[in-house]
Amino acid sequence: MLDLSALKNALASFPSGVVIATAVGPDGEHRGFTASSFSSVSMTPPLVLVCLARSANCFDTFFSAEWFGISVLTPDHENLAMRFASSQTADKFSPPSHFEETAHGLKIVSSALATLICHKHANYLVGDHAIIIGEVESVKLGEGEDAMLRYRREFHRLGRPRVAAS
Image 1 (cartoon, rainbow, N blue to C red):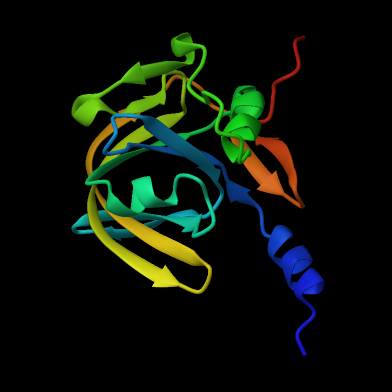
Image 2: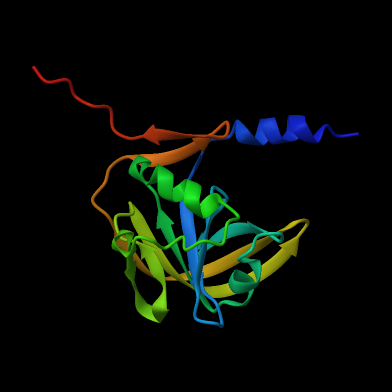
């Protein structure tokens, strides 16, 4: 029998980037979650995917949403990443100064390393998660150089090595 604890530890040993995915529910409420399961799928057409647990509070919103946003995080977004990773239903989009509204009424992280606005291409229910695939309709690049990574259940910084002052 597979040791699920060992599997989780093995998967946590694979470093990955960190994003916040956002969507708007049919009730007009903004929802979002933190994910490290984000990937490019295709360049033609431009497709990306994000995975979401079926047990997530925002599952119904993302599964039915026609549009969603992806914000690629920097190390400065650690508190925001923790808030969106929580199952708490408190207003994750506060303070509003951390977000900007885009086309289709989506809120994205205003200081993200990059943001992608995606039109839903497909949903796939697989095990206890859903794979949500979107066609990228627009991209915005931010000013930062350092990316946030998730490795062994902790956040880390990845970027260009700093040049020491002479």
